Length: 372
Image (cartoon, rainbow, N blue to C red; front, side):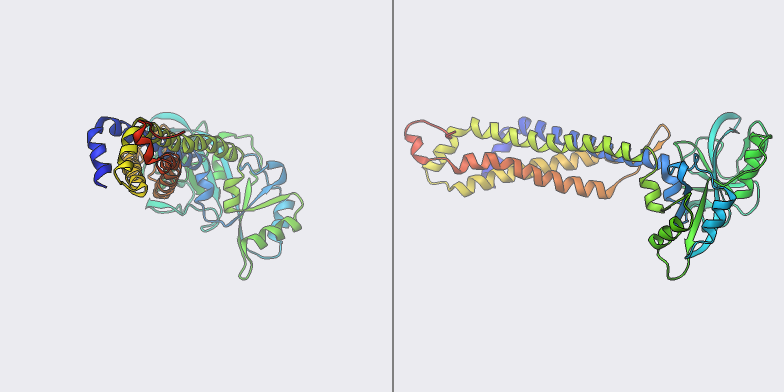
């Protein structure tokens, strides 16, 4: 311990730069992790944080809510499937709206009854109880706050915000959860020539004694043109989500390799540079184990301080917003990456430890250092 800290004090700039490098890499990893989570939430948070445990799309919709249409015959087959407890229509559309005097677009999701598509992350206010009311995404821009009125254009339908909820974004747009009746009025206001408004999906709740997976199988068997999925599966299989995750996996893999490589290479170079000193210490009786422990103490200090520095940099940005993408602190990601990078860092430092263990004290008489 004494040897480890004494060497670090003598080379404080060198070790400080390494700690800062590790910290910046950790910050980038955590920021990318939060960015991935925020990006997915902004696209499909409405599906993840709605109350229906099972959603049913049309087969042709390919699990895209806006592209799916449930016809009356298919709806009747779904409602008649074995194991269905409650069933309700779910509609979704993107509309041009005026909010706070500015024209923008908003995703409107309508559900028939509470518990079958209603948002589960209410932060303030209440759920809509009448036509013309809505719950808005709490991170939406000005004009979507509690008490505001949003007007659907060009029809002029007014929707009053009676509540706000977190993480209910859809398609990275300001999002409104309304009654199904309000959704139908919004469709007719935006398109007066629309004859009938068909639901985009069905929201189901299994009967007592039926599991979510069992209900999915029953609906698929009962309706050939229906594609039933659990809530988690609906989120994971929404078009675009898997592509986002694959892109970020490559980034995380590269980051996961860079940190241990930087740490391992640094300590390997340091070990080679002080080869003669280590050989002399071994010649005067210093045990190899003590030198290895000293090395590992340095590795631990560099990684712990570096990771801590990275987390401190991550804290202020983890609760900010990046455009329409909400960011949030991810304690699970912090714990996972901290543990993983510590483990990989110690593994990479083993190459330097092997050099120390292979020191032959007799080399002190020849002036040689660590053998290759």
